[in-house]
Amino acid sequence: MIILLTVAIAPGLALFSYFYLRDQFAGEPSKLLFQSFIYGAVLTFPILFVQYVFDAEGVFVNHFLQNIVFSSVIEEFFKWFVLLIAVYRHVDFEDPYDGILYGASISLGFATVENILYILEFGLQTAFIRAFLPVSSHALFGVVMGYYFGIAKFSKDNKRRRWIGWALLSSIILHLAYNTSLYIYDNIMYGAIPFMLFLWWFGLRKVKQAHLLSVSHYVEQSSTTQSGK
Image 1 (cartoon, rainbow, N blue to C red):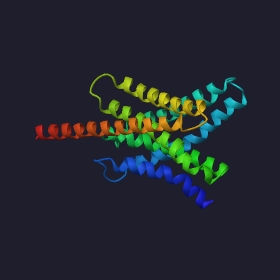
Image 2: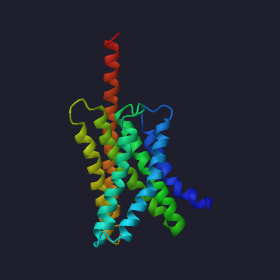
Image 3: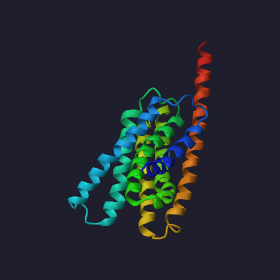
Image 4: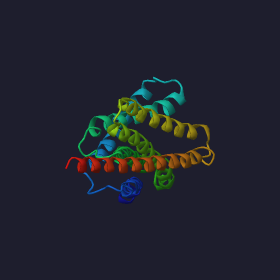
């Protein structure tokens, strides 16, 4: 049991460490980062419950709508909602790159619990492929979502609501594309793996852009402080 839990938890921790260590402005890990991970972990259960109810009630007669479209929308909506309500206005959200950290943290909390449940049911033989596909994909959905929250948080124009909306829409689109790649192609070499390579490229591009925004943010803050002296 301990081995199974360790294997299930390790990918999420590894990915979070990777994104955290890329933060040029990171000090001590904030309490909010840990809380965000817990929020994401707790989210797993209401999401699974809603999916179970919809399945049991036969709300969707189409398999694609239920398992591809609905699951993509509900998972990303819950994560987006928590990020908006519990994190977006928090004092520890200090620069644009923090959006990526908090988005990834919530997503990895969800992905880690989902991974534990899956590996406990299907065994260690699924661990490697799940680390590369579901866990990584959730992390990257969170990165993209958090990137747009970072723009919204520190935007000086009146487009904040647009960026917040795009945070939700972009993550749903990516999640839907990932699920569709698994649905259309039985062989992951033709569907999921090419898409994951694109997703890693796209996610790391957002990481780089968030770094540049954070640098500009702190340079501007420093200039403002010196001007006020």
